[in-house]
Image (cartoon, rainbow, N blue to C red; front, side, top):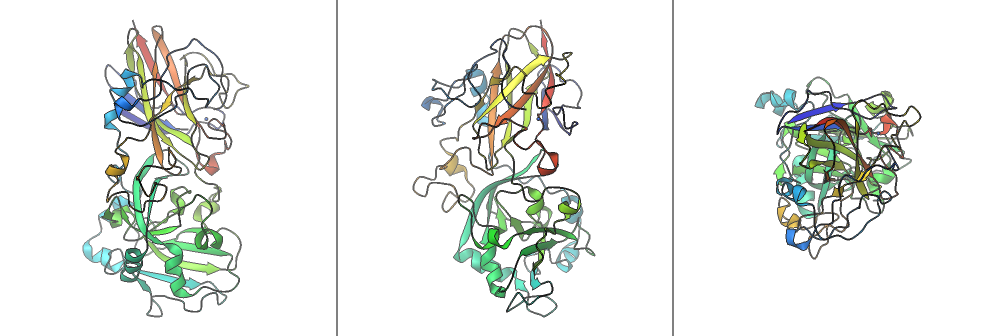
Length: 446
């Protein structure tokens, strides 16, 4: 399987750079552009899932409907259903960008850097003004220890399903269950007070023991009071029921449900209260939008590079579900040599056809590492998701395309949020999260 991440110019969709798929090999593409519908010959219809598949109810968008409209059907296309058993909502941790450097440190170096549960310590201090009645720091000999955080976690655990992705890329790096304690419960140990305007988070930078330069920040309102529908900001100690290891950002990592990875600070070691109003994030210094939440976008599509004309073309992929929710998914297939219209930078005029968002499996709760109890966004009585797909998490999707004549094509995909905005809209700005359309080449053989 080929996997490619590529950022195209802002006026065009993303495209696979990899070599041409052959035979039964599937080509997988991720990146991110698009929005309403043109018309073309109907390539196929995917119907809603049925109880026989054990996947719960689903309203499937039918080809020819407006984006996101739903109609009740009788079952998912068998060509797609045959591949649905392999979907994994809780994969193993894929490793952080700097995980390679950290994982090569010796046990002694990890301990010296405070990257073990026994040696980890957290400074909670103020920048200039006296914003804390009881500051805690290593310099003063009274830092917050892992044992203190663990005790709070055991008393008041917070469990959040979240996918962490890079604002500048497309990969769903880590999706699963994060467990820890509400950040505010830890910060109250330092007794914050006064004219607090910003809270900054500092961490070990790229495995360099001499540096603690990586920084993200949040307004105090997000920390001390949860907006409707959002989980508390947490200090995570576990991922998928396992202690966070240093190579995964542990032993303690910040998790902010609605934000991209850069806000979810790894190897957290210092919290600074300040009266400054401006964001102090490193990404802000790089020109990125550090306040916008995650977008709803197709992160990847996977398809055979070659497909016989007498067989349907089966497409699958992963969608990152932002806090505008997910209403639907669509694909468009055009001749490979057909230029995109110059006056259509967001690919609104492509011949979009509706795909299907795969519903939560009936045993979703049973598959949650450590069980569903107390997981934010799940029904306390049944363990089933209150909303599906879960905002801040991911969803699998698929499409079955029939009727293509022999030839070479370009295949595009886009997600549609609950407001009816189709990717890359409503925010087609890369500095607030890449949203260009993933695309790949396919060949239909005689």
